[in-house]
View 1 (cartoon, one colour):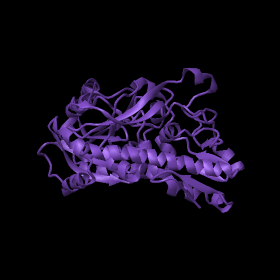
View 2 (cartoon, rainbow, N blue to C red):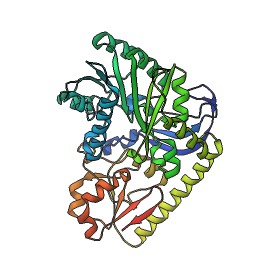
View 3 (cartoon, helix red, strand yellow):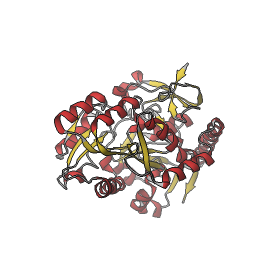
View 4 (tube, one colour):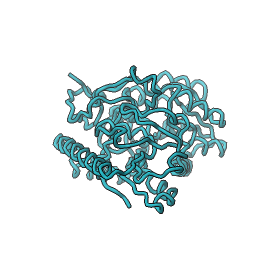
Length: 406
């Protein structure tokens, strides 16, 4: 019997995506035989409303010295994180000598905007290779996982923080109660927490079930985050919907009673109630929609291949692992996946073992169709790939439904 990671209530899975490899586990041919798999099952807690994985691989398997994701590779995300940092500086850093801490700070893409203004900062990044890039760029960074012990050490060495930030990382952590207790130790009395993660409401509305993979142990809603933080004497004081990652939510949290609570919180809670995010039947229906989406996508891919056309994947994203393995996409459908990340090139996709090749191969011999795995960066990518489209190239997308974009 599985228990909810937030409130210890019994939970049962509403969907299984089957045996799944590590989403970022790009591998070489000699590693195929020892590849790690787990069952990707998802449950909804009827008590606290948290959507969560029933099983998650050990954190050291997912975040290590070979972690292949670098935030700084996307211009769109660079702009987004600059705006995030400016928002914090303008609205929440009131003390004379502020101190900002970011969890899962990656290559320092956000903290660099505090550094340039001479603001004291510290990044906490468990993946050694990306932490090294941040350090080389002059971003104060420690390589470890954040918990209560880590918080005490930071306070001893640097003092308490004015802001604790996170972007696409809180949903990765199964032991959130320890993290929140660490936040309470770390934060000044009037300090704020600001983080953003993929939003369950968007996953259901847009059918972006590729947000469900090993690293995302939770899919948050405002109601589930409210429940979680209130257990620790903290409250959600604002929420800000974001377009990133196909639909995210930014949460602003502080000690209870310190700040006025924005009306946006109650408005969003009302929207969630109207969507049925608190009802088990919503998730049963989501499962049927996932199955329907899978069937339509495979029908489309098979039809294109029957016509003798070439399909190449565009961007070897972590999210693509769920789509590829759940749907049964193989090298019979996709010739290779084009990607600009050097550490992924020359390797194979997790599970299906589709070759990942340099972006230059895409440019040298355009396919008939490009399967857009990085659909959340569609505007940026399509502006960049005008020549591909002018040559007659078409895009295949799968969210919110499988279709061809001319």
